[in-house]
Length: 250
Image (cartoon, rainbow, N blue to C red; front, side, top):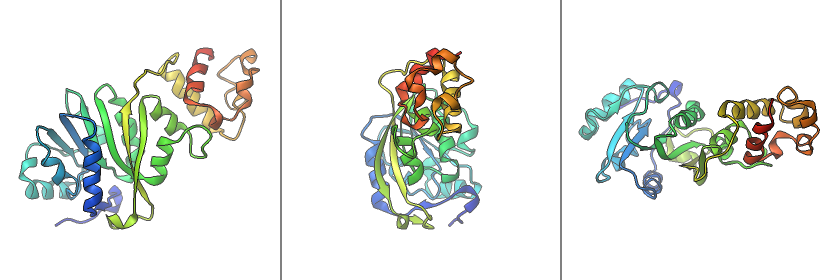
């Protein structure tokens, strides 16, 4: 059949119940174009192929898995993009939805790729390491709230859907997993500029235990830094707090 490659972060789903639930969650928001990232052995793919009136493309970097998928699922002929998801342009010109049991070693990078494609990506349902899923969904005050949480939630609403045990995979990973959904924010987050927003958030969390006043002193003038909000630590500020502060940056 095929071999598992640790170098590609491969852990293949074997639990049919989990596969079916992912597809059920996927269908709660209508779509006509679908991109599956990392189909691997086709555990979820076989259900996606059966969806009516859907244009499907599968992105798979592993030569062996591509050959296996083409042989096992003839329906995928000309629908497999044999490259890394991180190195391709948007697979459709029209809006599309993304689904996948993402390779854990690049899962955060996949989220940032989706953010880059946000004008086209209308939804995502993806499997992540539980720790990463919690970070993406975290709100201010949480110990895992940080740069990834804020930069994702600036563009997408994050919904933590369900957890998946280690035994649902082959081989079982050493960590628990979870499935989340991203949907575009209904309201655009108002910032002075996206570049300044990213710079502020990243600068603040480089010293997350320090007061914002000390962590970000190079980004604001002395008078602004005297405001009460700068006495807080970065993890205490909401997404909207950071957005608002961009308008006061130097």
